[in-house]
Image (tube, rainbow, N blue to C red; front, side):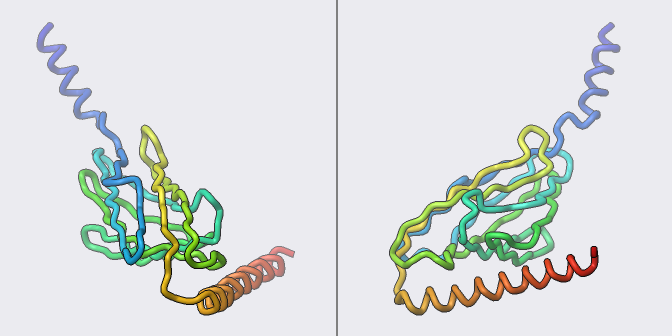
Amino acid sequence: MYKFIFSLIVFLVNLNLFPQEIRLSANKLLYLYDSTFNKIAIYNIGSNPLIIDSMYSKSQSYLGYNIEITLKDTIIFYSLLFDGPPLYFSIEPNDSAVLLFERPYCSICKPNIDFADTLVVHSNAISINYVYIYVERDGSTDVNDEQILLKDFIQILLILQQKLIIIFLKLLLYH
């Protein structure tokens, strides 16, 4: 009887009872005054590869984030915009990815206005497939209103122009 129970336990342990699981080193990015960068690590504490397949702003605002993602043998530079390109990377079991966030920018916000945002990170984790990263910024800046608003407004117009061209081409292809 004991051999059967021992065999059953060994069998169950070898069945991969610990699938991919996601953990964060912190769940908040706080930018005060002159702070420029913030770092968060994503850990895969499971035994299967953890796939991060998207990240987006929950507030659907015009905030932007430049992120440097460092994996074991790769560095990915990613710009998360209000409707940016998809994000996809994999973290091996018992490994991590370090996300270095540059100070977030708001293309249509006025300087010296505080703001908050929530980033949602989706993965293939079994128990919970998304985690939240809360972002707070004090809004202080040493650049005057005209420089920020004009430069960033032009950037938004260029992004919208690119999206309209893509939509137009899709319409042409499908009709």
